[in-house]
Length: 51
Image (cartoon, rainbow, N blue to C red; front, side, top):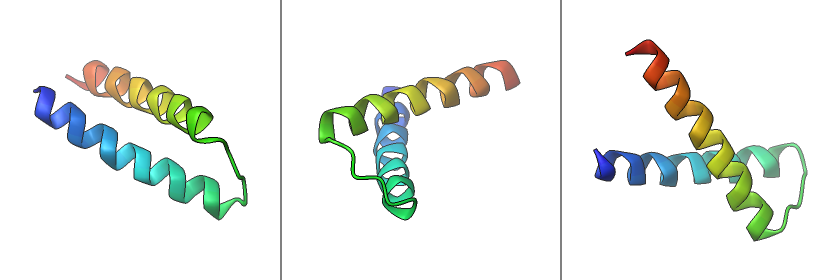
């Protein structure tokens, strides 16, 4: 399960970076990581609620 979560985090990180670049936001790497962690928490909550 942990391997899946790590891969998911990598995917979310790339997705968030691409999304922020798309809307033209230049965010500090630290803030970017916080945003990606928040997005991952949301995705995990959604996944658990569907289970």
